[in-house]
Image 1 (cartoon, rainbow, N blue to C red):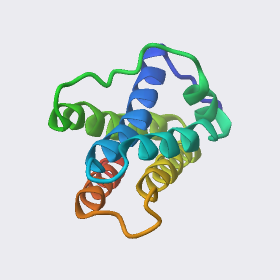
Image 2: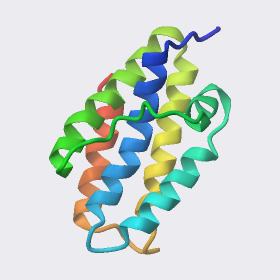
Image 3: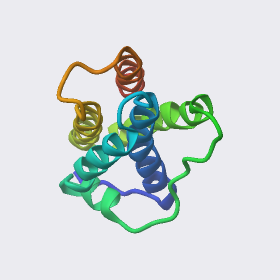
Length: 135
């Protein structure tokens, strides 16, 4: 099945994926937020398929503005649900691919300590996973 993504669809996918990594990084303030962001971003840039192409594109349409983690979450969590929902409408395999890519990225971001994630990181991971599964 061929997937046709509008510019807005692509912006939503990028905002959702990179926003998820940003949320994990923000939740890891007691640890190493820069390492979390770096590891998560590397995972996203390693994505393949249609989603990999969308995430790798140089673009300024990623909307991660906000002064607080709550403001970021208000933008990113709905974007995750919307991204999966839009992909499911066209191709279930691409929706699953996007979900898998985001999960790998947040797991990579959360593992910067090589130990169990902090309670705040674990809670943020749960919220991201719930948003992905809400579609």
